[in-house]
Image 1 (cartoon, helix red, strand yellow):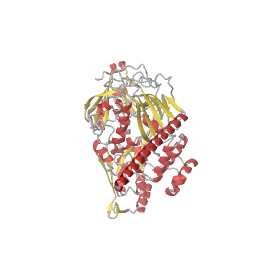
Image 2 (tube, helix red, strand yellow; image 1 turned 180 degrees about the vertical axis):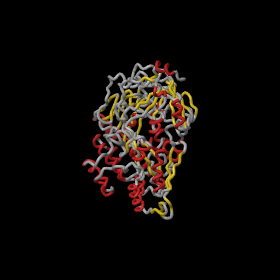
Image 3 (cartoon, one colour; image 1 turned 90 degrees about the horizontal axis):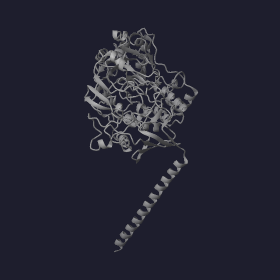
Image 4 (spheres, helix red, strand yellow; image 1 turned 60 degrees about the vertical axis):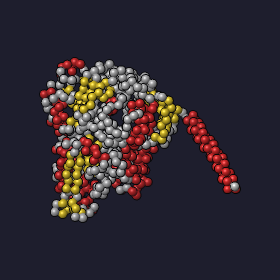
Length: 629
């Protein structure tokens, strides 16, 4: 009896205790909510149609159209472009499959940047934004008139679904863009709020402003984590009309596109259709262009630019060759070592191999003197290092002095420079000395250690790369290395890179100025062993990690630039890559059937599969050419 009373008393006490705990919990939650609300109310809230990461946006709401767009441009005409490789999926979110790089044509984002600025955002799907002085959250007020091409409204739930798809299924590099997002809340049909685990930084706000919607209604009974070739609803000015998997992809302009009259869209997206034809041979693609089967191309081969366009169509003006300036901040392009494999985990071996890359000879004999050497991970920008370290850069690096080579804090980094004669004996002697320090000895013409010859395979996806790599491979063989080149198709290449199944690859990383959290995926230790990450080299360096976090936390452009330059020096002096080359001009060729504005944007964009969004078909020029489109 006593036992039953004790149990009953204990149960009542537990119930009272649970009720009390629940009341306390609710009270604390309400207190936290009220505190957060009071903090928000105490802060000045910015409400605007635009924002910039640093400073103020260049344009205000009185803008009627971009200066580099013609609002009276004629609409219509069919364009054919060439793309290299193939595709087997339209799902650009997940790691599996190879997707077309032109898919951005079908997606509008919450906000869009200006081509005259590096880090600005203007309302597209969002009519305005709101955020507090500490930048701990951002709220997007979306346009109720925004529609998918199937007529369904674009809502905050569609943006939330897109974000959650990235968080749950997205490629590692894509996920890294939104690592600062703590919560996302749908506040209404056309209102969504993102809260961050950071404060006083505009970078996370700018990143979520670039989100595009996925239709919740369309995907409710489908699996977004799988590859697919049936296009979903389009939120942009174009939709996918025809698909021939791996061969061609056709986009058509959306009739009654909801956003056509917005100031940021006037004069853009002027073509009735854009078709991408896929080629697995670059020379065949060039010949298709010269035969009039492709309208526009970006030329990435110095040899082709110097020799392949000496044709009648260029002489008589039917084909136009142009070299507009490239003011866009560059990114590192180079041969990336796989540090997960021996002997590339030894910095002496990496430095020695760097010495065997004779850029001056390659520039003279193969590149037609059209390129300059890259000496920074952030070339053509205000974020790359130059000269000897400044006092401000040394101050940033000083806490890590014991972990750095002395030259990082005292010397200018310059990639090895030869005399360009092709007889790089001095560099060969220096390289062999470094190999010896690392335990490798030249025996009977072979570089040996523990009875094994050093071997190295350069993995390429474009045959063009063979030509510029050949002198480098020859020098590696002279040093006793069993060096080879392997060319694979684009699908196999993507899988091998995702699996880090390579010794050396040629890479050009995209650069998102000003640099921020994406650097974690490029160079951070946490990403080094994550399949499909952008840290292809496998860099694991605590100093690099610490500097990246300082960049992310920077509260001024000046501080960000200083720390980025310091990071640049640490990366360069560790010889993680063999820097290659860049060109300060675009090289484009196109059939003379187009009109374009007199004013060029400062940061004009041309890509291998891209097309100037502010061009249009000129009827008179098109009639003169009489191409079958």
